[in-house]
Length: 204
Image (cartoon, rainbow, N blue to C red; front, top):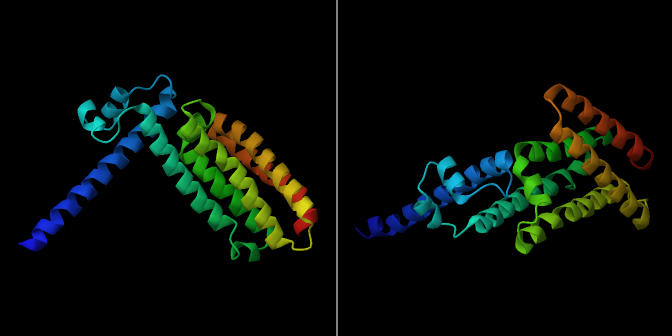
């Protein structure tokens, strides 16, 4: 009997977490299609197939949803950074390593189009603090990745090369997100070519 009582709160928490995740999934879809400013909690509730009242049991307003979604993006991106810039990946051949870095980062952005909306829309200071820290974190991780691959490089050169690499990626990303599938593949390959030629003298 006691075991059943203990299990009930755990099951309720699990259902609550699942419901929150489904609300965030719905918000991601709504933000991606409508933009943050046009989206409403009613739109998000409809997308999640729940009543607005049920949504408000978990989030008080649209800003709270955006903050939770930004937190989820932050966690996922940090895990990606830790993986592609790890010590183990630094042992890979240069071309393979660079391809994996670019493919991993692009996969995130293509899977989460609402991330760019939260990144460029003044949602709130709390959301901005989260999203605007991520490009700087990418640059810091890229710098660490360069140092691991080329220990002889000076700190100044690693910092500058990381800065340029991230800026090249960000510029190409804006094009990639706007293009049709066939054109998108061509730009991705050009991005890889550009970064390969830029970094090869330092890392190969």
